Structures are given as structure tokens and as C-alpha cells.
Image (cartoon, rainbow, N blue to C red; front, side):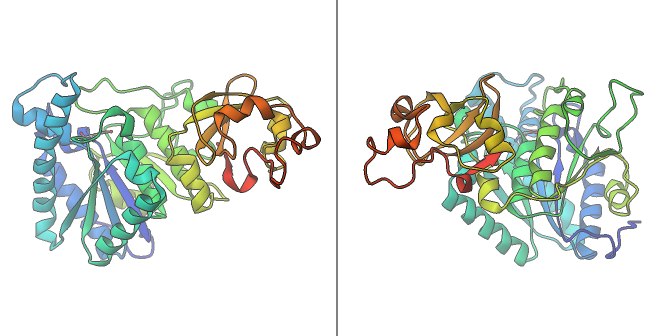
Amino acid sequence: MSRTNSATAPRRVVIKLGTGVLTSGIGQLDTARIAAVCAELAALRRAGSEVIVVSSGAVGLGMGRLGLKKRPSALAQKQACAAIGQSLLMQTWQRGFEPHGLTVAQVLLTHDDLRERARHLGVKAALAEIIGYGAIPIINENDTVSAAEIKVGDNDTLSAMVASLVAAQHLVILSTASGLMDLKGTGAIIPVVEKITPAIEAMAGGTASETAVGGMATKISAARLATRAGCGVFIASGAEPDILARIFSGRNPGTFFVPSGLPLESRKRWLAYYQRPAGTIRVNAAAIPVLREQGRSLLPVGVTGCAGTFAAGDVVDIAGPDGKVFARGETAFADGEIATIAGKNSGQLNPLYPGRKRLEVVHRNDLVLL
Ligand code: GLU
């Protein structure tokens, strides 16, 4: 019986399920597990939560249906597997929710749907309507039409993007891992991560599975994204019974990543997490604390050079002298202009740009620290 009750149920929650949770062997549905997950999600709904699911498994189920034992290497074959598996996946979810009187809604996204501002807002509005109708959105990457350049690439990241988009209170990433393991210490699961430090990142590995994509590394970077959007993130085992009830009754069976106290506002989140930067602007060491600690705009005097091809208004990374990217923002200058303005102060620049009032390269309102 579920122990979730309305006192602890989150207002809005995104639950991400990995291929390994939904299938056993290669691409064989674990129907008992799926039935149990649907019962748990239905209990959350009854307790008053809005539930959004991010479901992997399309490629794995497609492989299972086609009898493939190895993940295909050719993109078109993976796309075909996803097309075959995605419809099986949706049938599975609908069947699982049927006994609870719930309807599912398929939402397939590419990175561009989240990156381009108008589409981003369109997806947000559509999700709100689906939830308003009482249906459960089941989101996956649109693998069949996603070439590498437009792909998010893994559903951990996609789930964090979705959690940020819908301003979820919690993101729960259920996979075959029970949480983040303290690889340097006791090997036990770390119950709470206050801050994602390099030591935490060092505890991550990839995945050895034939059907899954992510691993602990993508989960940690997803946690970074979602916590900065003000969303608490749980990583726990989807194989354990009553896992959601245990999470939301405060027993924390896995790892909890504490949400940032000061979430980024929506436009900065969009800048930071949904973009694919067109290039990089390099700055000198003196500019770093000016942006980092003083929250000021990037001026030409701090710029040393750039890489990539970009126009004014494009989103670029900002890197220090060591090449490490520490910020991202909308540039006011195209790549071809950077060499002209780099290192110059306003006295030197004003004659070059007569009548142009603002000579910031990236204005602080258009800049976000990573
Ligand atoms: N979209 C992929 C699928 O449905 C899964 C990606 C992932 O698990 O990260 O198979």
C-alpha cells in the first residue's frame, strides 16, 4: 500500500525512468515493475501532486522487438529502433495507468524545441494544458528525428531541462543505481549533496549497458542543472518497491541534491541550460572576478579573443585564460568584431563606434555564471 500522503506530496514532480527500470534483459518489458511504478505515480496524483514522466526505453524496446542484441551503431538504425520502441512504450504506459483511470499524453522533444525561445514557451504552455486536463505527460527525446546536432542526447539531462521548464519542486531520477556512491570512501550511498563539488563529480562513471545511455555522470550534471533552477533532485533505485512513497515520506533511500537557495530566474535558466553556444569569448584573468563576484557586464577591455562563428545576439561561452568556461551570455558583437575591440577601453572604442551608447560585450542581464 502506498504511504504517500498529501502532507508530504510535492506540488509538481518530474519522474525520470531509465531503460533499465522498465525493461529486463535486452528490451523485454518488466511488466510487474511498470505496474508497480504506475500504482505509485497514481498514488502521488491522488495525494495532489502534478506528475510528469520522462521515460526512456524506446531504443531498448525497439531492439527487443527486432531481436537485436547489440545497440546499433548506425544513426538510422537507432532511429528506426526508437520509432518501433516508442509506440510500444506508450502502449505500455497507457496500459499501466488504465487500472487507475489515468490517461497518458505522448510528448516527444528535440533540443531545438527547448532552445528556441518561442518553442520553449510553446512546450511549456502545452504541458500546462495536458496537466490541466488531468493527463500524465510521458516525455522522451524524439530520437527518430534527432540527429546528433539537435539532440539533448540523454534523458537525465532532458528530465532536468523539463523540471526547470515546468518549475517542478522535485525531480526523481530512477535507474538501476541506488544513488551516488562514495567511491573514495566507504562505498556507501551519499544521502545528501549540498553542493556539486569536483569531488562529487569524480564519483561518476558512465554506463556499460547496451540499451541505456547515461550513467552517474549525466545524472550529476542533470542534478546541477535542476538544483540551480530551484528543484530538489533525488537519485534512487527504480527496482526497489515503494520507492516514491519512501522518498516522499522523507526516508531518502538514495541521494538527495539540495536545491539552490537562489534559483536562476527563467531567462537566465534559458540562457544557461537550453542553448548550444555558437562560440567562445576568451577573457583575461582580471575579468573573471568582475563577472563572478561583482556581477558586472563583460567589457571589451577584459576580452582577449574568441573562437567560433557568431553574430551579435548569439549565445556564446565565456572562458578564462585557462580555457575553462565559467559563464555564458548573449554577445553584442559578432566574432569578426572581437579582434578590433579586444583589450580596448571606452576612450579607444568610442571613436570606432560613434553614437553607440552601450559598449558591453555581454551585458550583465544577458550573462549567467555556470
Ligand atoms: N531516448 C532514449 C530512449 O528512449 C533514452 C535516452 C536515455 O536513456 O538517456 O531509448
